[in-house]
Amino acid sequence: MTSASGRENRRVSRPAKALVSLLCSPLVLAGVGDAAEVSARPGSVVRWSGDGSESCGRGMRTWSANASTCWFPIDLLEAPGEVAVFRIRAGRREAAKIQVTDYPYPVQRIKLKDSSKVDLSPEDLVRVRRDQARVKSLWLLAGPARFRLPLAPPLEEMGPAGSFGSRRFFNGQPRSPHSGADYPAVEGATVFSVAPGTVVLASDLFFSGQSVFVDHGDGLVSMYFHLSSMSVAEGEQLESRAVIGAVGETGRTTGPHLHLGLRWRGARVDPSLLLGPRAEIPALLESGDPVNQAEPKAASRGSVDRVEVSTGGAAAERGRYASGETFRCRPSSY
Ligand SMILES: [Zn+2]
Image: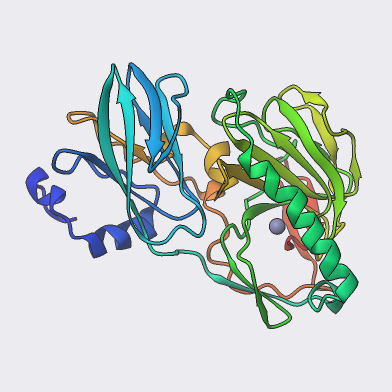
């Protein structure tokens, strides 16, 4: 990356791309060869804008462009390597490549005093499987997009996003990676919908506690976990920033906070990316377009350097909002 030559930049090796992306993601690479190309980490989203874009696709799956932009969510567990995508623009098929980097997130070790949420009883296991079956059907939802990016903040005061993607060990046992972002908040703080949508699930679930799922169209579903109370019911239509409920610590959690999750066409994506400036989302560029190298925003990077959190008892963390008000929480959970 030290070369001043555009030609040499286009020849940057794949391992080098992965390293740079790991350190500086989101980072946009200019077009390579005939097809536009971009590097993106697992759990991110790639945008591809172009006047006249009609539809977008990956493999056999196609969907409508959103205001001439194609959005390609990259699942948190997407394998590293090349993903071929395409769009139909002014009746022509155009191809592009997304280079998915290695998994960049750290290990997080969490100690829970209550081991019943780690070593499940047969009854709890049945309940978890029932919960999973209810939730899984939501990833197939489709419909016209009802949202715009960036999404609206789900809290009045947004602290730093925490631990998206962390590979987790609860009481020493490996569990699924953390597929949402944990935001510090006081118990009872109001939780808002990030966009207009339909409440598709509002229920008390084993791991995520009192949980609300909102369908925003185009396969985007937002999730609000560990609530102390829910203010909405299934089927309810919500405006942007409608009140969802209140922050709590229900389910598998070590203290009050908001867990915000996003699935986009089934892919687990980093909420902080869609809450932040659109320019920070990795982009496929037209030949001749300016390369967009937005500076990563510290508050949206997540706590990727927090490699261990020991919680429970008096191990509560303290912090301060931008407004100066202090919060006390143990922000770690499902
Ligand atoms: Zn969480």
